[in-house]
Image (cartoon, rainbow, N blue to C red; front, side, top):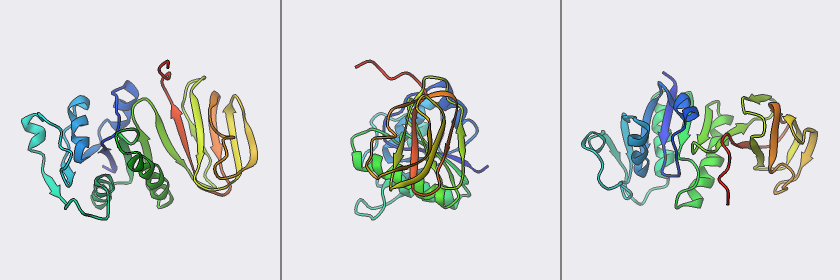
Length: 215
């Protein structure tokens, strides 16, 4: 089995779509991410981290999950350590559950950037909070997505983007150049079958499969 779900410490809600995405996968928890296991009905095969953020009142079965303990002063986050362990165990596809939000914006940014790097190395990666999803966009590899009409999405550039094409959208793009830091590709909407292609650069699709809560 090549798909692993990595339970991270960010925000996570249970949805039917998330249940389908993680069904049948192997599971590794990263420190506080173990708290999501009970909500999702999952039993991790491993719990990784420095254990400085262990949730209170864990049930006995989760508290007994095998642990791989690291010192607090280390050069990798608990999430990256959990991902590395999944790759050592043969992961070819990763679902990073709880990749957004939480108390640490730096960790959330790392998950986005790390997902792009992992995809470039050949690993399929999905980032999710249940309410929003992220997927790396690789140059030279057109991708399509199964989002319903009206789904809000953005293309986040991690560099200057060259030859960006977006189809099946309210505002399509045809081989455009997008400067790093531009807001051109923020807040688009799906209209048909969403397709994205990129000639050069590093980017990530961020989509909201469910309606955003009213502010």
